[in-house]
Each structure stands twice: as structure tokens, then as C-alpha cells.
Image (cartoon, rainbow, N blue to C red; front, top):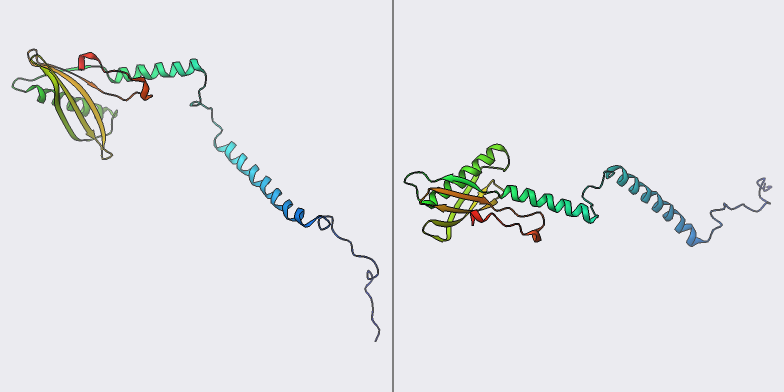
Length: 182
């Protein structure tokens, strides 16, 4: 029996250039390529998803001052004093309570606040004679949002002046409620 050698039996086998690399590089190269591909994909998706103007990222001092000034104006408008009348036979605390509830129901009907009103209470916090000072809280919606109010009642004239207390956009701004309500 005669053994037949294949045609390339006498020649040395040729190795691929990749297999001629050191073993540690053979392991590191596929992971590096995969890392670059994943990084590129993440960058592309992030660029396509969040490619919007940066409105909130204001760094210029003049722009920050303008935003703070606008926030102050808005809070002052929301805290503006409102007046109501105490009806005949109504106590001052009942008049304040009715005025605040009427305001809240009106704002809910306009869509300014979520409703309905679930709880409300007013307590006298000071004053005497012709100037009684009150603090009221109105809770609205099932998410329990509480709206605080400061009010002053003048029983002699039958006038109630009340202001909603609003948190400023930046807590350190400290925008006071009108003196007519405190």
C-alpha cells in the first residue's frame, strides 16, 4: 500500500496575520473594536435624541438676572391682593374662608389649579378690633396640593383682603406678600 501525500504536504503552512499577533493582543483587539462601535452608537443616539437648544442652561450673569426678574414679577402677580366683602350676618373668619374658597373655585374653573377643593381651613393669627389677621390653607386634588393664603378682615367696613402665598422659583429670593394681607 502506497501513501499519497497531499499536494501542499511539503510546504510550510501559512498563518493568518491576525494569528501571528501576541495572544493578549488577539483578545484585546475585538473588545476595543466592540467598545468603539458601542461608543459610536451611544453618541449617535444621544445626538439624535437630545439635539435641542439649551434653554435652561443659562450661564451669562445678565441672562440669569433677567430670569430672576421675570420670576419676581410672576410671583408678585400671583401674590397680588384681592378684595371681597363680608356679607350681612357673617363672621370675619367665615367671610375670609368664603372669599378664599370662591377664589380657589374660580381658579380651578379657569384651569389655573387642579381641582376639586378637598379641604380648607382658616385660623386667626393676630390683630384686634378693626384689623383681624388670618392664615388659610386650601387643599386641592387627590395629590394633596396645599395653597396657603394670608388675609386681613376689617369687620367695621366689611372688607376682606387676601393674598395667595407663592413659593418663589429660587427659595432665597424671599418675595414678601403685600402688606395689605398681613
